[in-house]
Length: 219
Image (cartoon, rainbow, N blue to C red; front, side, top):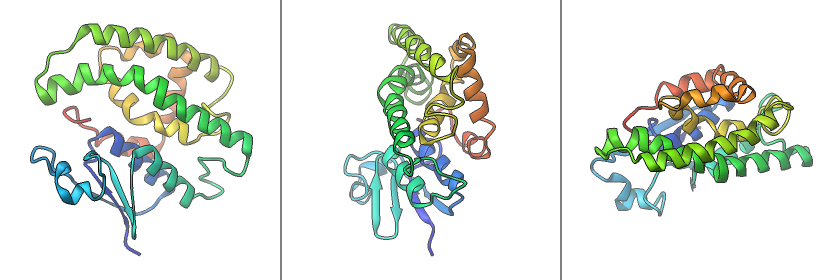
């Protein structure tokens, strides 16, 4: 059987979200690089994969998917085993908590943290745009409030959805990894349960491997 294909450079955070899931389930895959400087992502061939002209796109046989969180769920659902059960769909309450914290990541955590990464790393290095400190300061304040909620949760549970690792935890990986390159990484020191959770995640072989591919000039 041909390996699944991931379209988009492994240096990009949303691609990394997909790759870490593939590493967790141990499935063979091929990364098909998309050349951003030549705007390959806006050309008809890629638009047929992802009509919004962004990455990643994902191919499994005749099935083509886009949106990294949806792709991640597909991978973790298709290749679920008793040892790798990241969606917990056999338990209604556990699955609900996975969904809750996946939504929190997308709509609370990432909304606060991603602008810091963009302003401190991506815009200056990839586009030569100076950091907008006002945006950074506002985002840091938002992130502190989000991390207060995370601290309360992780002081009572080993992982976000409960005492088991799930797709909700994995989804935090790419942007948090990049955040740790910014001058604001020490913010986690004020939230010991959050810091311990993150350090535990980064011990996973999947995250160690994919983190080496994230590049400071790409997102």
